[in-house]
Length: 121
Image: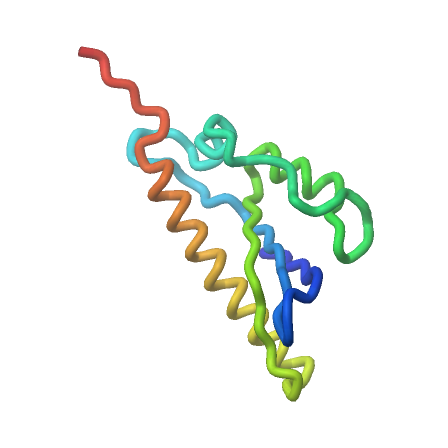
């Protein structure tokens, strides 16, 4: 399950968002787990959000999950139409988050595809 944090306004009807989502299970093509590759490569790191219990903050547990590679964090900008209902805003925000999660997952899997491979000649 993803968790979206809506942060500051960046412009007219434009908001900065951060989404956290589970690291994919499984391994890259050389057998390194995605979690291990994220941690060893230095990609897994603390959140850009402050630790706390407010809506614009991240819990200590969630931050620890980012550092340990159990969760991935990505930022995106969200544009909304002020005439939308709350339901329409939530639907659009969920759709944008899902798109960003898919894009970031693909980026990371391409980046770390061969991470951990050692060739001895």
